[in-house]
Each structure stands twice: as structure tokens, then as C-alpha cells.
Amino acid sequence: MKLRVRENSLRIRLVQTEVQKLVNGQSVEQTTDFSPSSSLIVRVEPCLRTEQLAALFVDHRLSILLPPAAVRRWAETDQVAIEANQPVGDGRFLNILIEKDFACLLSRAGDDVDAFPNPKHKTTG
Image (cartoon, rainbow, N blue to C red; front, top):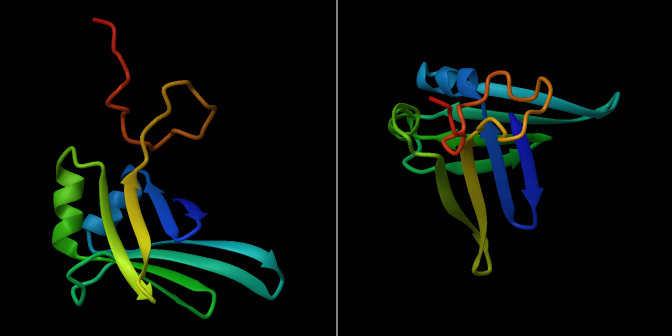
């Protein structure tokens, strides 16, 4: 899982095994420690109670909730991302983007091991 936070937007990229876990009804989670007593937990999970991609932030935990039907459609097609704009008050929104993590066009050692094949990669035939 790769997380990018920029202004009022969240972007999360998931590799193939992480997407498959979501399809199977499991969550994907990672922890980043800042000190012995402070960490950020990011969890992406399918949730039957949500009709749209949503984000919650409570007690050092960022939870991204996805409708299972949207996860299946995303995983089984060439759809690249699931996106939503979540109201945060005062007419402002949080843009949430969950993407398949594609392999880089230029090789980077070890970083692309489980990435999705890049659709822009030209194969020789």
C-alpha cells in the first residue's frame, strides 16, 4: 500500500494481492511508527454498510471503507481507480482515490514485485 496525502486529497495505491484480499472480504492494513507511543494506522476495507467510498480518521487510524460490489467491479475489469468526494463541512470536500498500483515503465529494484502490469508497457513480439 502506498499513501499520498496532499491538501484535501488522499491517494492510495494497492498491489494485486492487496486488491485480491479486498475482493475476498479481507482488509489491508499498514502501520507507520513515528515514535514508541505514536503511529498512524491505515486500513482499507470492504464494508457492507457503505454505498460509496468513504474515509474516517479516529485515534491515529485512517479507515477507508469501500462497497464490496465496487471492489469486485474494480478488480475484475480494467478500471484503474475508485474515487469519491467526501463532504468535510463549509462547502469543502476530501477527494479520495484508490488506485491499482501499476509497474513503473522504468524498472525500480523490488518496488514493482506485485504491481499490476502497466498498460502502457510495450511488449516486443
